[in-house]
Length: 234
Image (cartoon, rainbow, N blue to C red):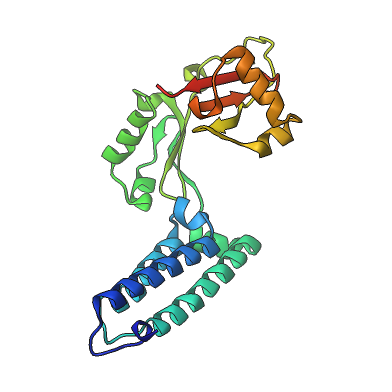
């Protein structure tokens, strides 16, 4: 465990062991903090990313520094992070302070220029985001909101919205999401149990309909009506 402590010099193996320990520790830390810190990089997530990167980078580049101090500091930061998340969930005031609230950039097809400065974006950025939503004209937009995560939500005027089956009063079937029962030749027994089927039933269905072995199947899905679709390796 000499690599764990600061030394005058480290061997190649000790440098590698430091990198492995740090990598596994960061994976564990990310798991504890949750997927939110990856999918939604908000203010406290951004601060954590900066601090963590700075704390863990030094022991990986300076043999005089040990890993113990960095890991203790990072563990304390993770606890602070989780406590902050709990406070955000419980108290609206803290949530508003750290996350902010959505505010309009466009309202009733009119651009609110002062809110562009508040969001710290230019008119060109706003127009670019509108084009990304395949909206050609600003006056087609009823409302555009600047979200706390830095994205823009765009809502079209009713006359510009696509007609839905509900608008035309067309009867539709309930939504049915196909479940994956085979992926890359491997059977997902848990899905079969959830739909009340077993492995023998599936193999019989595949043999009667497609006459192939499991290891030849790239993907197989089944819907609520037990309709099976099979995609073979090409």
